[in-house]
Length: 298
Ligand SMILES: [Zn+2]
Image (cartoon, rainbow, N blue to C red):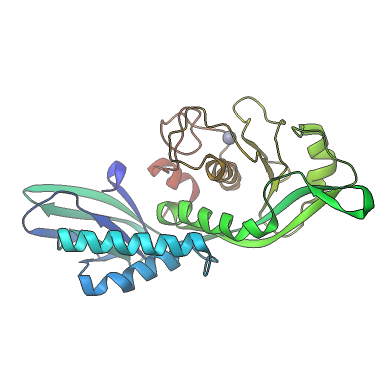
């Protein structure tokens, strides 16, 4: 069940809701911006495929995406087997505000549905390393350009179903310094000799620098520089109050990128809504209705 009685559906795409624990007949009503149907077992493969493809652009063949596909298939099959008629596929037919009323087991609830157009963000990654004797190099970050496709697939999975924002990998390269940088990397050296090596072209460049020490208060995990459209991220951000099993590294990346997307729409800073991404309180990967309104309103 969606939280906030709110659901984002991509225009000309699909989102899914399952009705936990309800018994008896299910009926639903909605306007013409949506088409809704209960998923049958013979439709699970096709819908799971569409759902994964829609929300993991650029991730074809990546282990994370193949795992997701398997997880979604098995979860959808088990819901359809156990609770026939309780998994609903919601298709967006026209952008704008819509609604969906569902009655099941004597309960009725109404969801606000935002049918949104897809937005794209081009993202580059830069990985820090330095020269060593004999003409070789040594990495300063545990990550490498090979990880970039996985980062993008994961970002798409975080943002896609919740906001209908998708990421395209612009490029991923090493940045080679002449000497080993002091760790943690500070703000001055980052701005002077690292951020300057961002490519021109992508919307945002994310730098993996090893340990990040340049954050203002509340930004020890990473920092977005809104005048440069670059972000620096710590390799192993502190978990602090962020609940298991959330991946704190990917949460940090999603957080800094959200600063960029909100900036483009005229918003700055954080909010104080608990368990929502970009909160100055406890964060999760969840994006609530207000965030969706900030970044991709219907
Ligand atoms: Zn922040």
